[in-house]
Length: 508
Ligand code: UN1
Image 1 (cartoon, rainbow, N blue to C red):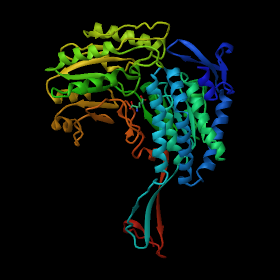
Image 2: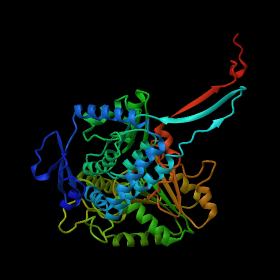
Image 3: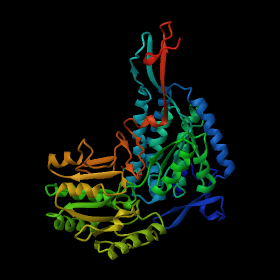
Image 4: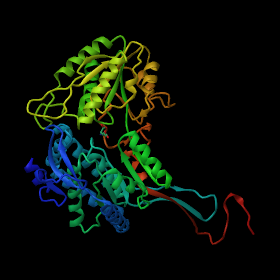
C-alpha cells in the first residue's frame, strides 16, 4: 500500500494525512479500504473559503483556456492519456483498494479514461457546426460551438475515476475548465488522478483547468451546485441526489447533465445461447459486487427454460470467488460500507416477506483475515405472478430478482416497468426478437442503453452513455455527448450591402 501511495505522489501530498495521525474532526475524512475495513489515510477537506478559491480558479483558468485553439487543447489531452498509460497499474490498484472493486476492473477504469482521452483528441479537430442556406439573398448562416464555462463535475464512489474521465476529457477539448467534487469515499483516487492531469498542465504552461474540491454536501456540494459561475453541473449518483441537483440548477436556469440510478433488466429468450446468457448475466449482476449503475438487477427469463437457467446460474454463482479485490482469481470484493450491507440484508428480508424465494446467497460471506462487508451474490426468484415490489428499488448490492415470461411483449413491458431507464439487454437467437426489442417506433426497450446478446453493464466509450426517466436523461462519453459541454451560436451574416428582413416583413 505504501508503495502505491508513493508512486502516485500521495505520501507527501499536502492534503493527505497519515491514517495513524488523523485528528478526528470536521476538517478531515478517512479514506477506508472497504475490504479490510481499515483506514488507508486521512484527507483534508475544503471549507467554504477553499471552495470560493477553487471556483475563482476554475473561472480564471476557463478564461485563458478557451483562447487556446481546440486542436492544441487536444494535444494536452493526448498527453494526459499518455500519462495515464504510465500510471495505469498503480492508479487501477488504488481504485481497487479504495472502493473494493477487483484489480482488473480498477485497471479497466483507467483504460476507460485513456480511451475517452483518445476519442477527445480526435474530437478536438471535429467540433463541427453546420451551415444552412439563408432565405435571404447575400446572407450566410452557420452554427458554431463555443466553450461553455467551468463545468462542475460530481462523481460517485463506484466509478471514482472513469466518470471524471468522461467529463473532464470532453470538457477540456471543448475549451472548458472543470471543478470536480468526488465522492468522500474515494478522495485518494481523485487526488492521484488530478495530480496526474495537473502535472501535464504544468509542463505545458497551461492554466489550472483540472480543479478539485473535496468536501461535504453542505459546505461544498450545495454551494457549488448553486454557483452561477458553473453553467453546467454534470452529476452522477442516486436519483435522490439528482433531483436535488436538478431543482437547484433549474432554479438558476443553469444546465444539468444527470446520470442517476438504474434498475436494469436482462431478458433471456427461449432460444438464447444459454452459455453466453449465463456469462452475460453473471458479469452484469455480480461484477463490481452489484454496485454499478448499469448492474443487472432483474432477470426476465422465458418460462420454458427458467428452471434450467436458474439452476445453472445458481451453480455459477456458487463458484464466484469472494475476497480481497487485489488477489488473483477473486471476482467479487466487498460492499462499500456497513450501510450498504444493511440495505442488502433489508432487501433480501423484504423480498422473502413479499413471497420471493432466495435460490442462492442472501447472506454475508466471511473472508479470512478481512473485516469488510462481504456478501454472497444473491438470486431471488419472484412469485409466479411476477409481483415483487422490492425489485422496484435500486439496492446497490449483488441481488438479482428473477421473473419469468411467456411472450416477448410481456417481457418488454416488465423491462419498461422500472422507474429508471438506464440499461437493458436481451439474449436471443432470433432476429425478430432482437429487432422487436430495439424497435424504431419506440415500443421496445425504453432505456438509454439497449444490448443484444451481451451484458447490461460494461459500455464502451464510443457511444453516448446515459438513460431516460428517473435516470435523468443526460448523455456522457462518446457520440455527440460533447455538445453538452459547449454553447451553440447561430450566426447570420449579411454580405449583400442591402437590408432585408426574413419572413418577407417590410419595415420601411
Ligand atoms: C456507472 O456505474 O456509474 O457501462 C458507470 C458500464 C461502465 C460505466 C458504469 N462503463 O458499466
